Length: 332
Image 1 (cartoon, rainbow, N blue to C red):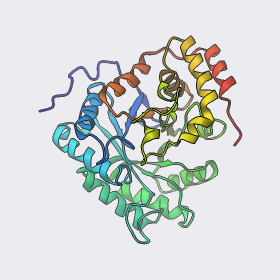
Image 2 (cartoon, one colour; image 1 turned 90 degrees about the horizontal axis):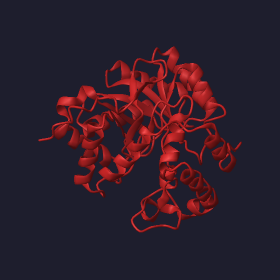
Image 3 (tube, one colour; image 1 turned 135 degrees about the horizontal axis):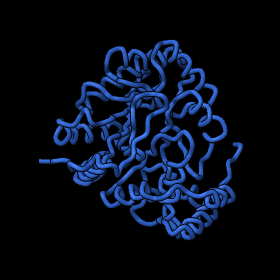
Image 4 (spheres, one colour; image 1 turned 45 degrees about the vertical axis):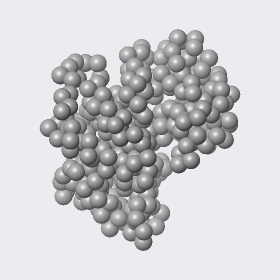
């Protein structure tokens, strides 16, 4: 029987208010994009979720298509929640998303009300919960009017199947329009989830300042660029790494294209007396408007190592300038 650490809220994990809402999120949240599918070690997955909660990490982020196979991450997390966390549901923030293909036929992906609300109902069954705290539209659908997709998010809240709504992977102009539609529907957008890291600074010039001014939180995914911003790829592609997995998204060519930058960033990290991934995580957490950084963890040791970045001092201006020199904001 799992008994959570009674000291999990002792101050080691800081929490920040999400935009102008009343909801607080931990400085680091746990993403279940990888490591919770049927192909993964379920004993370790359970241990990671337990350890995360013991450390005060209260936000578990999912999507309907996470796995592999699609849906299996929600199934596995749902089983663990039912067995270990049933008495602690009100201490948790659970998020899920719809938008990528999940089943055959014309309604299996996209942004129609049919797809989004059917997908949410399936997610609730897999997660074995009555509601999720945050329901996202995972990506815009060019074939569906934006008003229809946003109305589906509003319906999820009105039906008490979600407490808040969010958007992910929306480009700047469409994001602004979607947020204003949600506002008209009395369902304000709580949070935006972009891909963001030292290697991918696209949200900085326009999206992050606009979110902050509009009172919307930001929770970047892939702050370690799918593992590129760790020491593991500095000398090649190790066996068992994400880039070596056939079902993974990280490709060898991506790493080779960034090798010079990675080596330069590693030098900066060495000068600060920290590993590269701690530098990368601390950098994301320090960025204006960022509410929480979304990480993945295959093992308990990997989770603990990432959470150690919370204890680091914010990066000084000299270090930020050095990072800007080797990994500047790019216009495209």
